[in-house]
Image 1 (cartoon, rainbow, N blue to C red):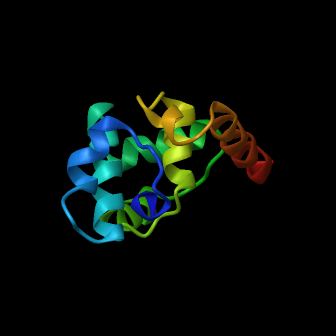
Image 2: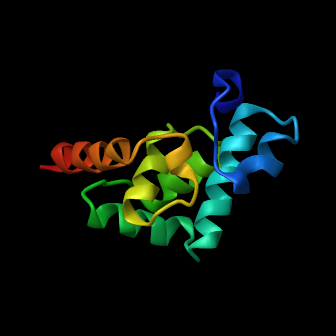
Length: 108
């Protein structure tokens, strides 16, 4: 999707996006790269999401990550928890803030 839009994206995503692999696999590798950079596994990420009002079972999250079948908002929610370097080139900080607000609204 990012390549189709011709959008700028974080430099650390370049190797994945230039590899010519499918969208789901690219999404999976990008999210795993960002989680690894934060020393998070899916269970720890699920707990961090819970702390900002996003409730998802770690098993369900793990399955979504493995399949690459998650929505981009998951990366925005990660950015709301811990800054994703270079993401501001693709999305405005207000998008990250709104993703967090939407998550908090959905839980309450």
